[in-house]
Length: 279
Ligand SMILES: Nc1ncnc2c1ncn2[C@@H]1O[C@H](COP(=O)(O)OP(=O)(O)O)[C@@H](O)[C@H]1O
Ligand SMILES: [Mg+2]
Image (cartoon, rainbow, N blue to C red):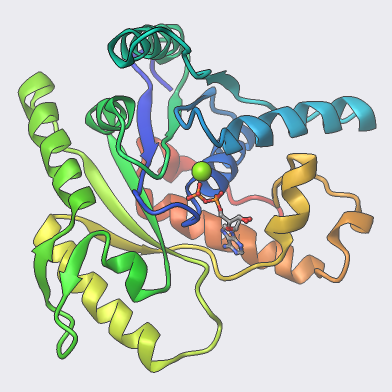
């Protein structure tokens, strides 16, 4: 890819447990396997799930002697200064240093944000070229974006997180005249069709239209993610079959396909030239 600044992908949603860190990690590894230089920044100073994924991966690779790709990872530790203002200043400095170090060297910079509103969450959003908001297949998750009319699925009132993104978009427009491409990602989809899932889909489509966002289908509900976290591996890595347990190779191939479709839906620069991964 060219030497211009990295394309910045931010994972954001004020709802915890929606799949931000899991998606950030899988996307990073997927792009690494496609030969891109990928940097990752974990802005979630409390949970640090992405950092744990990365550290687990490094330990596992060393233990098993695996030659697998790793992102250039940066995490922001919690500042313990005397005042909130001082802490914010220190955290901002750490964040700025990470951005400066990564943006000229990486093709893609993936930023994972926490499930709450901090100054760095807001700043991260205003840097996004692509913003991915994973949502579990539940109206409770949709409520973070907008209050929905229970009769027809129409958005009645925007939620706090949607307003945060709107502000970030305005800031971004002022800074360099660019828009943030916002994707609402339906994650952990149930394999069974239900009235809830149909209504959710309708509500989400209408909300996306109102927000100027797009809807993409993500990954289904897959138990394999629980086994992969402790060893920092993804469905794109060579995984010892002992760790897959009851999960079949077919399921692994299905998840790869789901990620391939997701990346295609992102319309990332240059990725339309990507080769499909071996199944
Ligand atoms: N597609 C999926 N299928 C099954 N479990 C998932 C899926 N995506 C995420 N999870 C699980 O959901 C939980 C929350 O995911 P995480 O990525 O930490 O969310 P967040 O970063 O938004 O808080 C984790 O236990 C993770 O393994
Ligand atoms: Mg997380």
